[in-house]
Length: 271
Image (cartoon, rainbow, N blue to C red; front, side, top):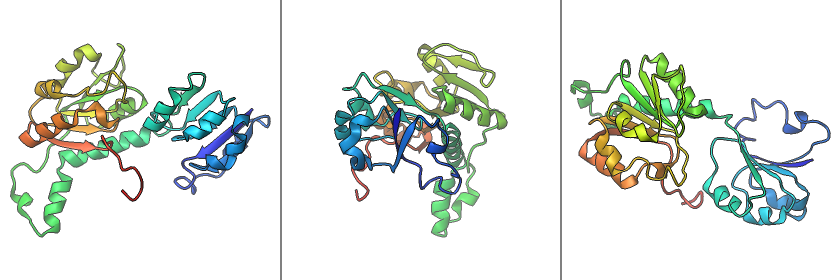
C-alpha cells in the first residue's frame, strides 16, 4: 500500500514530534511525506497512491489519482474545498480523525468565558485609560448553576460537557439521534431544539455544515432563546444565520457571541 502524507501540522507540533508516520506503520506500507500543499511535487505519480492524508487537496491531484481509495482528513470536519471536490469521486472513502477534539473544546470554553466575563470590551476600555467598567453594576456573568446547551454531541461536544461539569453547570445537548450520556442532564433531537433553547443561558454549537444544519439557528430560533443568552460557535459559520445573529446582538436579545468560524473567509493570506 502506498500513502501520501501531506503534513498539515509539521510546524505546529515540531517540538512534540519525535517520530514520523513512517515509523508507525508496517513496513509493507510505503509512506511519502511532504508539507501540506506540496502534492504538485508528486503529481506525475499521483496514480500510485492508495491513500492520501491531508486536506484542501487540489482537484488536479484527485483527477490524476485514479487508484486512490482513501482520503484521510486528520482533524474534525471536512473543509468546503474537499467536500466539493470529493462529491465527484464517490469511489473514494473519506475518513475523519478527531485528534484535536479536546483543543477545540478548550477553545470553545475560552470563548465562553471571555464572553461571560466581558474580557474584550473591558480590556478595550482599559487600554484607553477608561476605568468605568470598574463601577458598572454588571461586569460579567457567572457560570455556576447556569444552563449550557451544546448543539452537536460528538467528541467535541462531549469534551465541552466534561469541562462544563467542572463549573457545576447544568448541561443539555441536542443531536440528530436519540441517546443518553452521564455527561449531561438531557439529550434531545432536532424536534426538541426550541424547548432546549428557551432554557439555555449559554449555547455552544459544534455542528458541521450540511444541508440539514445550514441556518440551524435562524430568526425563529433566536425568538425562542432566553433574553441575554451568550452564544459560541466552533462548528461552521453558516449553521447560524448571520443576519439573524446580527439583529439579535444589535437588539441585546443576545448579549454576546464568541465566533471561531465565519461565513466568508479571505481567498488568500494577503486578503
